[in-house]
Image 1: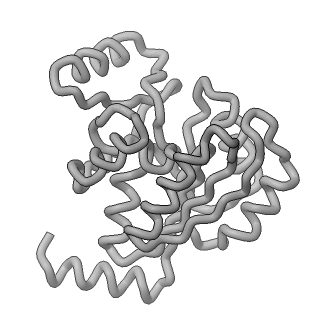
Image 2: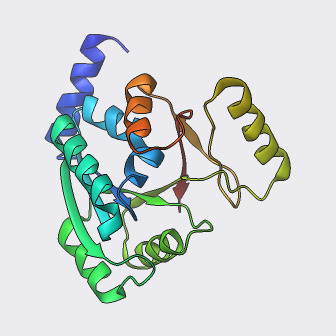
Image 3: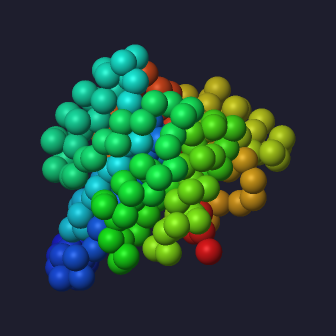
Length: 201
């Protein structure tokens, strides 16, 4: 992308007060699932806000890393602090209403095998009328061929591509990947390819 084009996109994003909101069930999901998207949106001049839903004594190290990354890349970070696997619907909805404007674009975890991901994504889809995308955290595809392909990809390249448990993805955001991989390693996760997203209608 040329510099004048990038400048135009940044000016347009600022003028329209565009914000991308990443809903992260746990501290680390935002970078594992949406790290490339975060970097891309910031580079395009959009505001980014990350909403971390859960907090446990054992996740304090990851909370600190999330806070450090928010400070480093200059985006907004809010933490609800519900215990894992016992998320309060009313508190979650109030948290969404407080931190998500009607014109924000929202990124939610896939409704996968993790109970927190399923709960948070389902509640958000019920109450939010925003433009929404789902992102992958795990290689949970029900298509065994895709899971095997992803496993082989990881074995060969050491970069595992996550996939949706149900259905197809729309886009892959592969952006400043090496920077993103460095952040994923800090969380103790495996470096992988770009973010895998699909639009929620």
